[in-house]
Length: 349
Image (cartoon, rainbow, N blue to C red; front, side):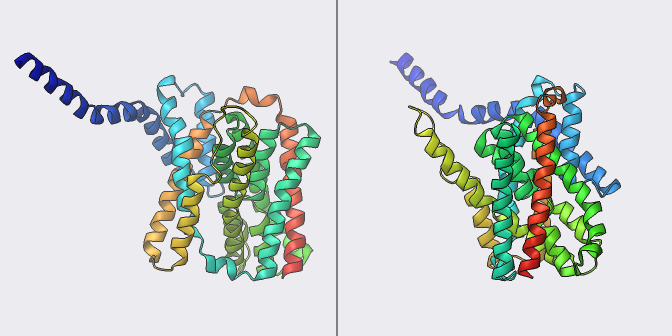
């Protein structure tokens, strides 16, 4: 009898205790990689302060790629860097919604809002079409199209969480939007006077065509009076990431129904719902500016962590197989959105 009671007690204890060990067993493998990721983010922030033209997200993925190809990435850190590339990214995308209010979008006016939507959709579809004609793999073309049409690296990483593309494809897409966006910082201000654009129109053009938010700010800041229009237009493009991801999710779900037993992706990813919820929260106007500024900084760190994590999965030797075709597609997409955005802002404004 006593033996049975002791056995029962051990059984009950064994059911109560495992919760903490289970959590610890899941977290412990992540710690080395997360520590390395934090170090990468710190270095990226410092790099941005020393060389402002290199955005924090751009610097983070470059450092991740450098670490991967310098032999720094060991098997022990892979769990943590992959966690940053996927789960931390989704948290960053959710918080990105707090940078946009519905009133900002409506303030553009119907013509400009329509132009932004048309330019974004046309760039996305046009890049996919060009990619198919140029022989670029479908997954790679999808990511390049997303980055060019919406918001650069963050959009590519978010689309990757829906499409499950190869890490090399992710790195290629991010590298291309980084190159093209950096060139835009230099070239677009030089074209403003020849193209006859006033500051507001130039700002709208920059916001509608340049890839990264930081690149848009750097481009528009060179022209007094252009920054406000540029940021609002750009954030409106960012908001289009949610329906774009949902659309791809629906397409993949339908395609998955043809495979018996296949796990179908959700119609709308949960982090996209979170993004829209944060837009709704920001639109209430109840959040003071100080917390919003702090959250924006935290969001930049989260996205930088995700970019570093993505970079650590990139091995440059494997990029040579489709490098030239992807490079051509990236520049073609950049030219496409530049021309479409220019025509769109002239018509709308």
